[in-house]
Image (cartoon, rainbow, N blue to C red):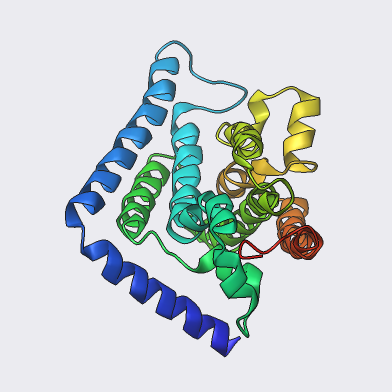
Amino acid sequence: MKKYLGLLLAFFRASAISDLEYRVNIAAKVLTDIIWYAAQLSVFEVLFRQTTAISGWTLETMRVFMGCLFVVDSFYMLVLQENLDRFSDRVRKGDLDLLLAKPINSQFMMSFQKFSTPYVINIAITTSYLIYALTKVPDFNWWRLLFLIITIPAGLAITYGMRFFFSASALIFTRAENINYVWWQFYKLGTRPDAVYPFWLRYAILTIVPVGFIASVPARLLLEEPSPWLIVGAFSLSALSIYASMRFWRFALRFYSSASS
């Protein structure tokens, strides 16, 4: 564990040095995401001008939901986005050949070798927005913020497990861009509260394709009476997602042909 934590720190330091060489690019990334946040929020700000509630969600609680979504998304973009988005290219170019020869877990190297350090700023922005949204909720119990210690890592682990499945399919199909497009359609389901969907779809995004744990579950644990089942589900599905990703990686490696062979 100490070795892997040391590697993560080294990867972060190297990524920060690399990113700081292009400071304008950092500003552009942050500005682009602020525009994306504003676009997402504007949809609900406009909708709630016409109604007071949607499937039990008010404007104040919807802001909390969006805050949870933005925070989880910021951590995902910081740690995982660049590695998993470039997965197919790295397989085709032979980068995996070098990683398989190293005395370290190849899945770990493919998943965490590059951090997108500008998103540290995004984490500060989105966390500030979530705190602001919570101040607008009447009689909010601030002790419930402790649930985020469980749900945000769980949401990241579940997101990673599903995203890794689609990325690692490049070992089998070589070019997996279209398969990755399927992932983004699933992810979009998690960017809206689970309560707005019909029962069968709501059940699906909380169990079969658990994108509901990205933002819906953290928001519900903050706003509603805590459900032990949601906490157990978060732990169980995050562990299952990581385990399944490891099993699939070993399976997919059987189909890999060295780029240098």
